[in-house]
Length: 149
Image (tube, rainbow, N blue to C red; front, side, top):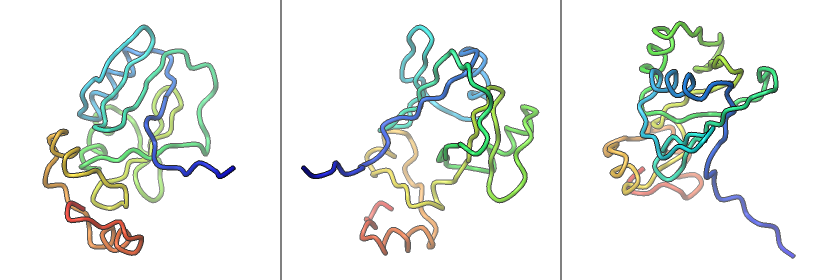
């Protein structure tokens, strides 16, 4: 029997203690559309992916565990963090911990291999996002560079 090949991430689920407070905070840090909401959960649309936010966090804050969230403008997130009174972590890149202990690492779309198709970017109202030469070279090295990257 052969192994299944990892293809991508459909969604990431974050647990928070207060869903409405989390949606308020995340709405001050990021621009997003709400894909849907059910009792105790909300789904933030990321085009062909989503971020699930679930009420009911019971564990303590994450220490080394984090997830990387891709944005179109990392500097805008940094400014929003300061305005929200959240101190970014020291060190390389942009990291922060939300009030419920979830650790975010914010990366800019232009800088990473992660790519959305032109159709997905257009559907998200983000047509025209481009990659840096370094990111394009990394994609090319893997045979993943397309006309829309």
